[in-house]
Image (cartoon, rainbow, N blue to C red; front, side, top):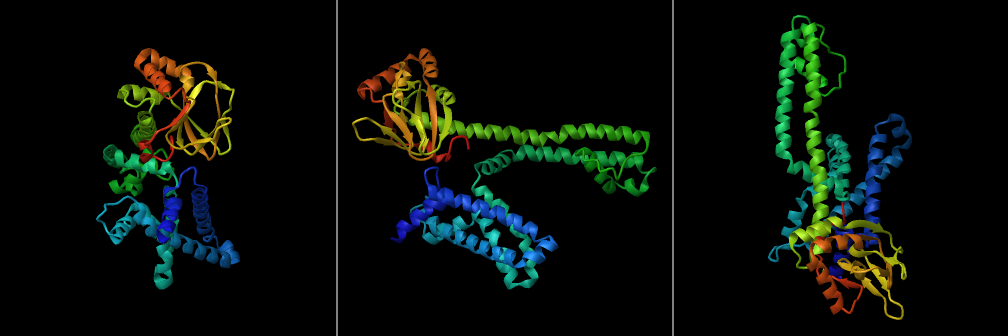
Length: 400
């Protein structure tokens, strides 16, 4: 009984998925609670708001801390449901899980509240509740991707940081030698000139410190130009790596999907990759009719997540889950859809246009023979279900 409850809680707060409405509701509630906490933390710094709504803000903080505490304890409780070595004890699994970055962030989200209540001198630590913003990383694949990008490009970013530090020191030293006689109060030493160098290189230009000599103005103009070039480097590195990471994750999902489907299993890796590039992503909400019987059949659909019901007149409906496909006969010839496909839950689908398949089959006749042979063996059944879905281990959605 307890084990079943723990698995259910695990599915809701850790696994989630498009088809799990309770998990979706929980994630949405936590996101809204985190955002509300950030607004409340900012509002408390306004004296008029704090004086007027002190009781409400204090109560909201207490309830929020209670929810974050219960969430943390629940995640620790279900930690043993995560894959782990069979010889590891439950305590060891939970300790290791508690030391993971996301769990440390969850702990810091509420721990300062208790420390401030027990030790009044430490109430200043409650400003750390702004760290609750970092909890959003758990609910945003984009934030996780950005973190991975920063880690992957750490060497390039470190090299850029060294170059930028050198440029700051060079700019400050140059202006010190040029302007120290004319403005000893602001350029009398290199550390003082660093402030000007930073403001100029970043093109902020506060205007509180400016060169007055002709040589200083020329040198300042050159520093501005170099600043534009050098400070654009880290932005370009992160943007390029972020785009590459998004495409890499999407490619891994699609390559694994294509490779596991009976229609394409065993094809050369380059052909599988080409099929994957031609797939088009589509998200449909539950209750949407994806294909209606009698409509022109122009593409084959693959189910990445969610559940699709196929309505076969006079027969028991068939449900396809992750790894399923339907509309396979559209790859070979123009015809009408033989059945109606409806999304039972929110679904992520990939589709392959028949025209794209014909293009591929002209380059690789074996691909066409394979599809024809399989449909012949299956008596031209228009759908199927892959037994394994390894691509789901790499991500929870397409293009996230």
